[in-house]
Amino acid sequence: MSGIWKCTDEAGLDRALRAVTESARRGNLIVMPTDTVYGIGADAFNNDAVAGILRAKGRGPDMPVPVLVGSWETAKGLVADYSEDLDALIRAFWPGALSIVTAQAPSLNWNLGDTRGTVMLRMPNHPVAIAVLRAVGPMAVSSANLTGHPPPTTVVDAQHQLGSQVDMYLDGGESEVGTPSSIIDLSQAQPRLLREAALSAEAIAEVLGCSADILRGGA
Figure 1 (cartoon, rainbow, N blue to C red):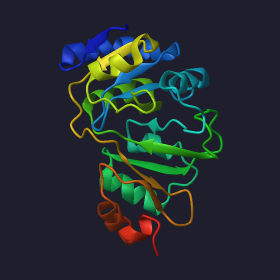
Figure 2 (tube, rainbow, N blue to C red):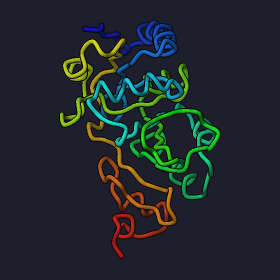
Figure 3 (cartoon, rainbow, N blue to C red):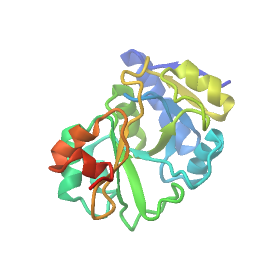
Figure 4 (cartoon, rainbow, N blue to C red):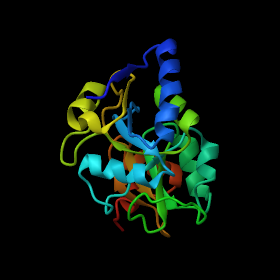
């Protein structure tokens, strides 16, 4: 199995960052901690590497890979329209456990799966993840589990599921939230909650100035 890199102190993180940048450049897969669960990721602009994430998880392109970013400014360059709703949600919940689906910038040359011109973005609230994302750039990242298995909250859990398919496993301790992010879709005229998980519909609705029932698809 691929080795585990301890990132729980500054020296360990510095060593890992030097290696992970080169590994991602070569198109390898990396497991890293986030605030919610551990994720398996690759350079978002390396289409072969992104396809490798889907293969490792046993998943098809009908379940596209989200993109994690290390700053608000990075997100602005990846979307077609930096709307008021998008800005409000980012300011309220990033870094944090909210994934946002929106229309992607039309100039982007990547293949995240069957996205229909959208991208799911998140900025995780974890120092190791942020450091990796700022070193590598935007990364396609999905939960580091085989499809149908529980998302891992420790690096050992992730390694047991994915094994040698991953080049580097970054250990940042146990994920604090332990629950996947909530997902809000802003790509249509009416915002819609696709997954209510780490954040409640009520918390998201308060920021958008609407009712939780509307976000859940009610009247």
